[in-house]
Amino acid sequence: MNPDPTDGSATVRSDGGMVDSPFETTSSVEETRGDRIDRFLEGFVRTPWSILRDDWRAVAGFAILSVYVLLGTAGVYLVEPTHPAHGPRLLGPFENWQFPLGTTSSGRDILAMTVHSTPSILVMMASGAIFTVAVGTFFGVVAGYKGGMIDTVLSTITDVFINIPGLPLVIVLATLLEEWINNPVALGALLAVAAWAGLARAIRSQVLTLRSESFVESARAMDLPTRWVLSREILPHLMPYVVVNMVNAARSIIFAAVALYFLGVLPFSDSNWGVMLSNAYHAGALYRPAAYHWLLVPMIAISGIAIGLILLAQSLDRVFNPRARARHERGSGDAIEPDSEAETTQMTQV
Image (cartoon, rainbow, N blue to C red; front, side, top):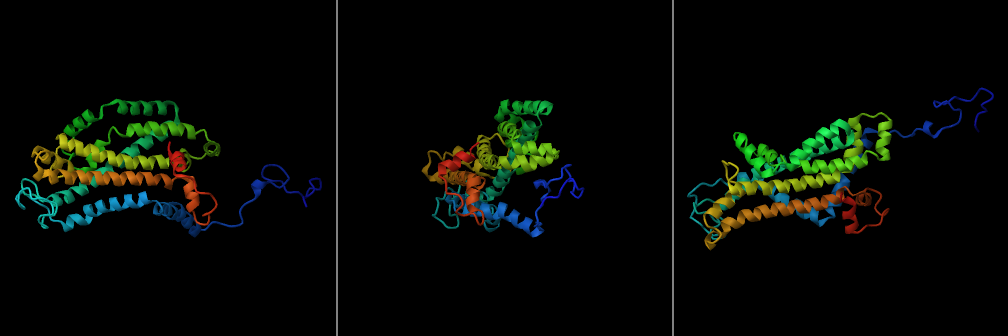
């Protein structure tokens, strides 16, 4: 029974009224720290794991990349480094199990060269991918959300990097930064110096659409800080695009590094897959059957890691798909009918 406003016993609400308001109602159950940890694990661990476990592309992609990670970590301790005259010259694969993948024209073990090239390739790949995504996302999100003069300045910088020819820029920077170029972290960032601009431009376009959505307008009306709005309201909606682009950027970094090493544009001090290809090519491996394995082994290594990254990028689409997540969340298994693969891909493409 509502109190009679005329007898003076009614309670004046915070909004100035005297009637019960739904905004005065608060939950009787308080979320504990354990509940917050469980919700975090459900959203970022259990549900993604459930989605990836049911996708053969994720299983295959992780298996392939795990092999490379093992080669780059444990493999370098299990396989001894090689040197010239380590074995017979141009020994074929599987002819001598001391050199299972054969040797080069100088007697170096091709398996050892491949294994000891893996760590620098992985570090370079991760460095370039992180640099591309971090810089591209920052420029795109800030320019799209803030607008005005900030958008003009950041968009101008982005357009400059989009129109700069990537190869000449890398050659010039490699010459100027010769002392740093042998560091795989610096080299990865150098190879991605012109790759972030396209991502920034695409993200800016998406943010221009998102900032007019009702949930973003509500956050701004509540006078929440810009950092909170960007991190809690904008970035989660961009994560599918960002993560998939990070994987694709890693693949592009490998191709760029191998190509530039093959062409002799980048200086080097240690062996890597691009240098192996260049040495095999200049030793006549293209027309010498006895040296085919010297050329094929690094090509297979490069193709294998590229295939693993492609499979992983395709499977990550589903991790951020709301319908796929709803099907795999605990306790909601049959709530939504499975959708087709084509529909899933369409929903995640931006």
